[in-house]
Image (cartoon, rainbow, N blue to C red):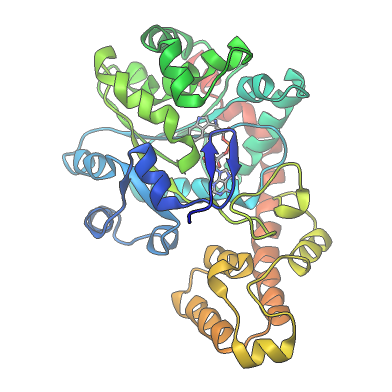
Length: 374
Ligand code: TYM
């Protein structure tokens, strides 16, 4: 029997059945037809797509065709700044940067300090806003320039968003948001209004440019409820429907479906130092056997192993990843060695990322949409 699982924008519980989740939400599988269309326009396909991390979508093919007709579009994604960024959060942003490199369109990035304030009883608003600035460094560090990346910190940059959010809010009934997000009578009204803001950014490029400018939203599938609603109301408000591209969650180091903010050892954060990263990888759950002798005799199980999962994320070379997979299964590769190889890959990525992050530190305001509109 299937294990029960729950996925909402604020919570992931149990072992996620991704095919079932996609069907529940009503998204479509990413098939070879869409991947080939992407390859036609981008010239290649990113490993995160080739390796099945991104696996579902809404109208990805339609936006590629729109692009093929020479029409304008934009990229949109975001972050709920509740603490440091972990490797899982970076996944949609790495694809975002790749899509930006390939298509050169504008990027809208929303920092929802208000959402995190409403959602977490312990969170002070000032703290969430501070995290918005900190997390913005992780986005900028990927190499965006201020002319193309438009950062929106909700409590700071609300002006262009608010009129759109008001129109969105008027279209959404309590009944609808209750059913979509599972709100209850004790949910605060900030959180109940909040979806209007996340939806509003999907329509912002059309408002700013004064012509239909649909967005493509790369994110993990937990964010789908917002964009399902956005698509339902778009046309009645005179906006094009947003398109989406959904990833699975990057496994926690504990082997669970999603990293947990309450267990810092379940994830590698972009601000972790080398010693911490080494320790977290050394302590990670694996698909290996209890003893080296058994591992050599019976082989390991890379399919359930977060260490293998992370090799797939950090190693662009297909042949190298395949070699790890097969030598784990055959028993030739032991977990200690495999973890050491992973540590080297992540250490390299994080070192370069942390340097770029610090260089961005006093530049955040130049990326904010408000600084460009005023
Ligand atoms: P947040 O901060 O929960 O997550 C930020 C982004 O990371 C994705 N994500 C993951 N992806 C892969 N593996 C994981 N383990 C993992 N955990 C989180 C999320 O899907 C998200 O893309 N409400 C949003 C902020 C937001 C937003 C948006 C997100 C505002 N506008 C538009 C996506 C698109 C939030 O709290 O994200």
